Image 1 (tube, one colour):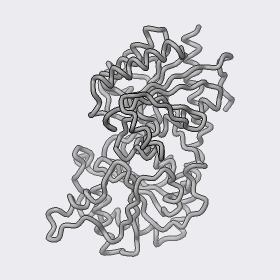
Image 2 (tube, rainbow, N blue to C red; image 1 turned 90 degrees about the vertical axis):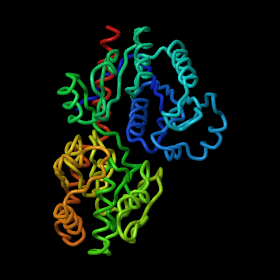
Image 3 (cartoon, helix red, strand yellow; image 1 turned 60 degrees about the horizontal axis):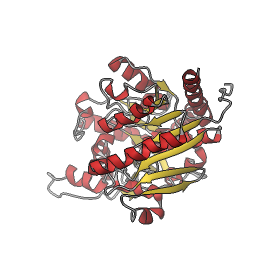
Image 4 (cartoon, one colour; image 1 turned 180 degrees about the horizontal axis):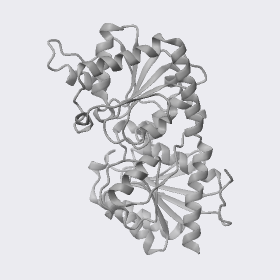
Length: 405
């Protein structure tokens, strides 16, 4: 693929969002941050506006030791250096969007419009579909500035949220197809943005079943039921659960609440707190479980696992089949399980079949080796960051050219 033509003048892009791109519990934020790093490396001038709002309180881990100092400046704007990027953040009173005050919204809006006038970007890019987000493209359009939205979920309906947007960028063809069918929108899929040097382990012991983010919508109750079953039949198979937004102990408590002996932990499960460095975690993983029950546009963990040559068992909804690229195993579950509050379980026969599939990853060495090879191939073919960057550059450069023509 030839290198997309970048405009002669250094393009200016403003990322403006009511969230924090350093949020370690938001796959969308992690992907957007990596995309901005790629664009800056390819000649774009980047500015970032955000707040100290996160998908989950644990997301502040992305700020590391700086969080304690940042949190002392409530109501003020702080600047954080993030390698070649710089984040300008309004420090809000709460760390979640539901706690945002009208005064904070007004503060951020003033910061945004002032930056539009001083930075004069060629493109404003953001994600979000709440009414307050509508002002982002509206203010840009009033200044004849092109706008782009990053769409990586299946939650939006209608077209008001994107009425003033010139370009919708998504990660998978599945999500582009979803919005084409639902709202007759045109979305441009560009792929995943996973820097292998940050996520691929140097060595692999391949000893544990990995599950990341134990929240109901991610299939936490199903994974808990599988772990409980294997705790009895195959105590040698160990699970590792990485907590980001979810709480594993609460899931076990809720699942066993009606049992004669309610529990909060399982002997075959090791719980790992949310971490910025996932390489040791992937180094221990033999397979990844991604049994998401809500619409999954492009779960980063699938691409991360494949780049490590780790086989994946996932549900067949959303963009997960696209991400797997024919590798791994897809689970087809009853539609009733794909409905909130995502706490229903399949019948025992289905649970047994999934347990048997997990066990085979440990018992059949030749078969497992083939799965690992397929995962490596899918990782290289589906999750090349260079190829994704070229697709992104092509979309943004064309937008700039059409705006300045």
